[in-house]
Amino acid sequence: MWVPDEGHEAMRDLVRARAAAVETLRVHRQHVSAFMLKHGRIYPRKKGWTMRYLRWLQEQPFNHPAHQIALQEMVEAVRVSKERVDRLEGVIEEFVPAWSLAPIVRALQTLRGVDLIVAVTFATEVGDVQRFESPRQLMGYLGLVPGERSTGETVRRGGITKAGNGRVRHMLVESAWTYRHPPKVGKTKLYRLEQAPPKVREIAWKAQRRLTTRYRMLSGRGKRTTVV
Image (tube, helix red, strand yellow):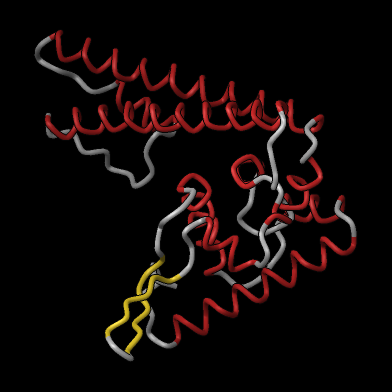
Protein backbone atom coordinates (compact mmCIF):
# COMPACT_ATOMS: atom_id res chain seq x y z
CA MET A 1 0.00 0.00 0.00
CA TRP A 2 1.40 3.39 -1.03
CA VAL A 3 1.47 6.13 1.62
CA PRO A 4 2.40 9.69 0.56
CA ASP A 5 5.21 11.29 2.55
CA GLU A 6 5.30 14.86 3.87
CA GLY A 7 6.93 16.21 0.72
CA HIS A 8 4.26 14.65 -1.46
CA GLU A 9 1.46 16.01 0.73
CA ALA A 10 3.02 19.47 0.55
CA MET A 11 3.18 19.39 -3.26
CA ARG A 12 -0.40 18.18 -3.45
CA ASP A 13 -1.57 21.02 -1.20
CA LEU A 14 0.31 23.49 -3.40
CA VAL A 15 -1.25 22.11 -6.59
CA ARG A 16 -4.72 22.18 -5.05
CA ALA A 17 -4.16 25.78 -3.93
CA ARG A 18 -3.35 26.63 -7.54
CA ALA A 19 -6.51 24.84 -8.73
CA ALA A 20 -8.59 26.85 -6.24
CA ALA A 21 -6.97 30.06 -7.50
CA VAL A 22 -7.81 29.13 -11.10
CA GLU A 23 -11.44 28.57 -10.13
CA THR A 24 -11.55 31.96 -8.37
CA LEU A 25 -10.11 33.59 -11.49
CA ARG A 26 -12.75 31.90 -13.64
CA VAL A 27 -15.55 33.17 -11.39
CA HIS A 28 -14.21 36.75 -11.38
CA ARG A 29 -13.92 36.74 -15.17
CA GLN A 30 -17.45 35.42 -15.40
CA HIS A 31 -18.66 38.32 -13.26
CA VAL A 32 -17.13 40.80 -15.71
CA SER A 33 -18.61 39.02 -18.73
CA ALA A 34 -22.07 38.93 -17.13
CA PHE A 35 -21.84 42.62 -16.23
CA MET A 36 -20.91 43.62 -19.77
CA LEU A 37 -23.65 41.44 -21.25
CA LYS A 38 -26.19 42.96 -18.87
CA HIS A 39 -25.30 46.39 -20.23
CA GLY A 40 -25.40 45.25 -23.84
CA ARG A 41 -21.65 45.48 -24.42
CA ILE A 42 -20.50 42.73 -26.78
CA TYR A 43 -16.79 42.29 -27.45
CA PRO A 44 -16.33 42.26 -31.27
CA ARG A 45 -13.54 39.67 -31.29
CA LYS A 46 -13.57 35.97 -30.45
CA LYS A 47 -10.73 35.74 -27.93
CA GLY A 48 -11.24 37.46 -24.62
CA TRP A 49 -8.94 38.38 -21.73
CA THR A 50 -6.12 39.56 -23.96
CA MET A 51 -4.48 42.99 -23.64
CA ARG A 52 -6.76 44.17 -26.46
CA TYR A 53 -9.79 42.96 -24.51
CA LEU A 54 -8.66 44.72 -21.34
CA ARG A 55 -8.21 47.97 -23.28
CA TRP A 56 -11.70 47.54 -24.68
CA LEU A 57 -13.07 47.21 -21.14
CA GLN A 58 -11.31 50.40 -20.08
CA GLU A 59 -12.78 52.29 -23.03
CA GLN A 60 -16.40 51.41 -22.26
CA PRO A 61 -18.36 54.52 -21.14
CA PHE A 62 -21.24 54.37 -18.65
CA ASN A 63 -23.77 57.09 -17.85
CA HIS A 64 -23.63 56.49 -14.10
CA PRO A 65 -20.24 56.61 -12.32
CA ALA A 66 -21.31 53.75 -10.05
CA HIS A 67 -21.34 51.42 -13.06
CA GLN A 68 -17.80 52.49 -13.95
CA ILE A 69 -16.61 51.88 -10.40
CA ALA A 70 -18.30 48.46 -10.29
CA LEU A 71 -16.57 47.42 -13.51
CA GLN A 72 -13.18 48.67 -12.32
CA GLU A 73 -13.50 46.72 -9.07
CA MET A 74 -14.39 43.53 -10.95
CA VAL A 75 -11.50 43.97 -13.37
CA GLU A 76 -9.17 44.55 -10.42
CA ALA A 77 -10.41 41.32 -8.83
CA VAL A 78 -9.50 39.52 -12.06
CA ARG A 79 -6.02 41.05 -12.04
CA VAL A 80 -5.36 40.04 -8.43
CA SER A 81 -6.64 36.50 -9.08
CA LYS A 82 -4.46 36.14 -12.18
CA GLU A 83 -1.39 37.27 -10.24
CA ARG A 84 -2.15 34.67 -7.58
CA VAL A 85 -2.36 31.91 -10.20
CA ASP A 86 0.92 33.02 -11.79
CA ARG A 87 2.60 33.21 -8.38
CA LEU A 88 1.53 29.69 -7.41
CA GLU A 89 2.58 28.27 -10.77
CA GLY A 90 5.98 29.87 -10.28
CA VAL A 91 6.34 28.23 -6.86
CA ILE A 92 5.31 24.85 -8.28
CA GLU A 93 7.92 25.15 -11.02
CA GLU A 94 10.52 26.09 -8.41
CA PHE A 95 9.77 23.14 -6.09
CA VAL A 96 9.41 20.35 -8.68
CA PRO A 97 13.15 19.71 -9.31
CA ALA A 98 13.74 18.77 -5.64
CA TRP A 99 10.62 16.58 -5.43
CA SER A 100 10.97 12.79 -5.35
CA LEU A 101 8.57 12.42 -8.30
CA ALA A 102 10.40 14.96 -10.48
CA PRO A 103 11.55 12.22 -12.94
CA ILE A 104 7.91 11.16 -13.39
CA VAL A 105 6.86 14.77 -14.01
CA ARG A 106 9.58 15.21 -16.64
CA ALA A 107 8.61 11.96 -18.35
CA LEU A 108 4.92 12.88 -18.43
CA GLN A 109 5.74 16.19 -20.09
CA THR A 110 7.04 14.36 -23.15
CA LEU A 111 3.44 13.35 -23.90
CA ARG A 112 1.43 15.52 -26.25
CA GLY A 113 -0.96 17.86 -24.45
CA VAL A 114 0.76 17.41 -21.08
CA ASP A 115 2.43 20.52 -19.67
CA LEU A 116 4.01 21.06 -16.25
CA ILE A 117 0.74 21.68 -14.41
CA VAL A 118 -0.98 18.63 -15.91
CA ALA A 119 2.03 16.44 -15.12
CA VAL A 120 2.37 17.68 -11.53
CA THR A 121 -1.37 17.38 -10.92
CA PHE A 122 -1.32 13.78 -12.14
CA ALA A 123 1.72 12.93 -10.02
CA THR A 124 0.39 14.56 -6.83
CA GLU A 125 -3.10 13.07 -7.08
CA VAL A 126 -2.19 9.59 -8.34
CA GLY A 127 1.18 9.10 -6.67
CA ASP A 128 2.93 5.80 -7.35
CA VAL A 129 1.30 4.32 -10.48
CA GLN A 130 2.88 0.95 -9.70
CA ARG A 131 0.24 0.43 -7.03
CA PHE A 132 -2.25 -0.22 -9.84
CA GLU A 133 -2.28 -3.74 -11.22
CA SER A 134 -3.11 -2.63 -14.76
CA PRO A 135 -3.66 0.51 -16.86
CA ARG A 136 -7.40 -0.22 -16.81
CA GLN A 137 -7.40 -0.17 -13.01
CA LEU A 138 -5.74 3.25 -13.13
CA MET A 139 -8.32 4.45 -15.65
CA GLY A 140 -11.05 3.19 -13.33
CA TYR A 141 -9.51 5.15 -10.45
CA LEU A 142 -9.73 8.28 -12.59
CA GLY A 143 -13.28 7.56 -13.78
CA LEU A 144 -12.20 7.25 -17.42
CA VAL A 145 -13.68 3.83 -18.18
CA PRO A 146 -17.05 3.38 -19.95
CA GLY A 147 -20.07 2.83 -17.74
CA GLU A 148 -22.13 -0.33 -18.21
CA ARG A 149 -25.84 -1.03 -17.92
CA SER A 150 -27.02 -4.63 -17.87
CA THR A 151 -30.53 -5.83 -18.72
CA GLY A 152 -30.71 -9.59 -18.63
CA GLU A 153 -28.15 -10.83 -21.12
CA THR A 154 -27.74 -7.41 -22.75
CA VAL A 155 -24.84 -5.17 -21.71
CA ARG A 156 -24.80 -1.57 -22.91
CA ARG A 157 -21.79 0.69 -22.62
CA GLY A 158 -22.27 4.38 -22.03
CA GLY A 159 -20.05 7.38 -21.40
CA ILE A 160 -17.20 7.42 -18.90
CA THR A 161 -18.24 6.83 -15.30
CA LYS A 162 -16.70 10.09 -13.98
CA ALA A 163 -16.30 8.29 -10.66
CA GLY A 164 -12.93 8.96 -9.09
CA ASN A 165 -10.41 11.76 -8.99
CA GLY A 166 -12.06 14.65 -10.83
CA ARG A 167 -9.02 16.93 -10.71
CA VAL A 168 -6.87 14.63 -12.81
CA ARG A 169 -9.74 13.50 -15.03
CA HIS A 170 -10.62 17.07 -15.99
CA MET A 171 -7.05 17.87 -17.01
CA LEU A 172 -6.57 14.63 -18.94
CA VAL A 173 -9.79 15.20 -20.87
CA GLU A 174 -8.61 18.71 -21.78
CA SER A 175 -5.22 17.34 -22.85
CA ALA A 176 -6.89 14.65 -24.99
CA TRP A 177 -8.27 17.31 -27.35
CA THR A 178 -4.77 17.79 -28.79
CA TYR A 179 -4.98 14.31 -30.33
CA ARG A 180 -7.54 15.51 -32.86
CA HIS A 181 -4.62 16.70 -34.98
CA PRO A 182 -2.11 14.56 -36.91
CA PRO A 183 0.93 13.39 -34.92
CA LYS A 184 3.79 15.87 -34.75
CA VAL A 185 6.34 17.25 -32.30
CA GLY A 186 6.27 20.98 -31.55
CA LYS A 187 9.27 23.09 -30.58
CA THR A 188 8.61 23.01 -26.82
CA LYS A 189 7.87 19.29 -26.84
CA LEU A 190 10.96 18.62 -28.95
CA TYR A 191 13.11 20.14 -26.20
CA ARG A 192 11.43 17.89 -23.61
CA LEU A 193 11.99 14.83 -25.77
CA GLU A 194 15.65 15.65 -26.32
CA GLN A 195 16.17 15.76 -22.54
CA ALA A 196 14.36 12.44 -21.96
CA PRO A 197 15.83 8.91 -22.01
CA PRO A 198 15.42 6.97 -25.30
CA LYS A 199 12.80 4.65 -23.78
CA VAL A 200 10.65 7.58 -22.67
CA ARG A 201 10.91 9.20 -26.11
CA GLU A 202 9.87 5.94 -27.73
CA ILE A 203 6.81 5.59 -25.48
CA ALA A 204 5.77 9.22 -25.99
CA TRP A 205 5.85 8.94 -29.79
CA LYS A 206 4.14 5.55 -29.76
CA ALA A 207 1.37 6.96 -27.54
CA GLN A 208 0.87 9.96 -29.83
CA ARG A 209 0.59 7.83 -32.97
CA ARG A 210 -1.74 5.37 -31.28
CA LEU A 211 -4.09 8.01 -29.85
CA THR A 212 -4.28 10.13 -33.02
CA THR A 213 -5.01 6.99 -35.05
CA ARG A 214 -7.65 5.95 -32.53
CA TYR A 215 -9.29 9.36 -32.77
CA ARG A 216 -9.47 9.24 -36.57
CA MET A 217 -10.83 5.70 -36.50
CA LEU A 218 -13.62 6.44 -34.00
CA SER A 219 -14.58 9.77 -35.55
CA GLY A 220 -14.67 8.03 -38.93
CA ARG A 221 -17.31 5.70 -37.53
CA GLY A 222 -19.53 8.66 -36.77
CA LYS A 223 -18.76 9.00 -33.07
CA ARG A 224 -19.25 12.48 -31.63
CA THR A 225 -15.95 14.27 -31.00
CA THR A 226 -16.80 14.77 -27.33
CA VAL A 227 -17.32 11.01 -26.95
CA VAL A 228 -14.15 10.13 -28.84
